[in-house]
Length: 327
Image (cartoon, rainbow, N blue to C red; front, side):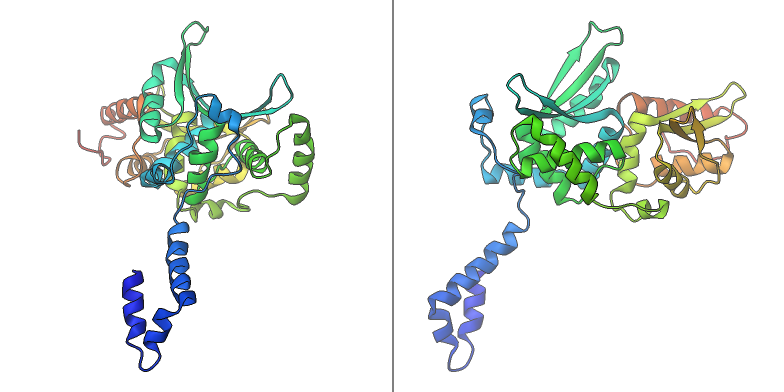
């Protein structure tokens, strides 16, 4: 590119060659080119501590980090939705009073294939099985260094963020800790106070329609469905699709908009909002969203549940004339 630019400048009558031979101009050209590349870099958030590197983490080369930019944004949006539902950003105090940060995505052990899939795409974290619990589970755990160097920068690069208040608060706090290189856990309280005063959410969503303008919204719903969605048939053969989560009215009203439904949002125990549809027209919209819209596919146990649901719907007289995906 530099050669093309200098050739163009040298063609300018009288002064072209003088410009090209100017050291300052050559430096300016190089800086401009570098600047265009830098805008597409995956920048590390904060400082990677030497202790982290001595614990087996290896500092990634810049070229290695840029490979992560090839991960589709649809996958990252799907992942954000799943984390919003079944994950958390854990910020804890070490025995010596320092801050430990990691991201944990937890599912039932029978759904370990979902975590293995995510691990294979991200090439980050470690899947751990907990077979001896009353409810056996598995967790994908991503350490602080990988969050700093790869995952959080990827979310920021693609302008993807969490949509539940709890996860947004955890993410904002973690970013503040990393950016400001805060080491002691006792300093977190001051950060929390500052966040409350600044109200520094990544983006303020003040109405349900605001969600529809998010480029990652549809794929986020796919991930959130894996965590909080249900496909089932009632005893009266009504097919149902539902969401249930802690109170967040605008989010649930946005579900009504995306599925173009008039169903009222329910409130349970003053703690949980619910969204549930079962009419023929609403069920067709659900099928269109999950099967005909080109979004990230449902995977794991929820994907199996969805296809079983479709099969059961086709057996009922009420829904047999709907448009279903071919097997």
